[in-house]
Amino acid sequence: MTGEDFDSCCRHAREQLWPRVRALELPAGGSLAEVLALLDGALSAQASPQGGAIAHNAVRCAFELALVDAWLREQGRPLATELPRARDEVA
Image 1 (cartoon, rainbow, N blue to C red):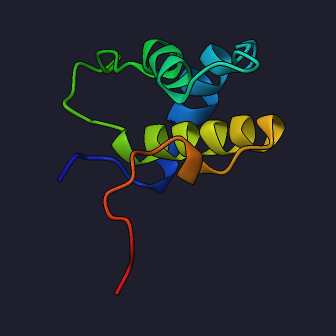
Image 2 (image 1 turned 180 degrees about the horizontal axis):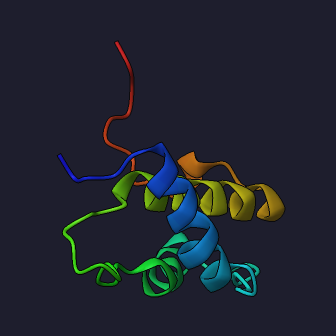
């Protein structure tokens, strides 16, 4: 549906996303909102060099999830502390 396949995702990750995030410094002690805003700026979609409509949503999601996970682990915080509570108890 989005035109992405395994090879194009690997190429996009290697050529586009990794160069944009490898030097990022995620804020120590910051909030998840700050980290997500920083990642959104670094990983924002750019036009395909071929002018096509390929959207590399899956690989962007993988990068974002991995970086958020690494940041939370470095901070020693579980994701649950960053998300609003939906319920007080689970049935």
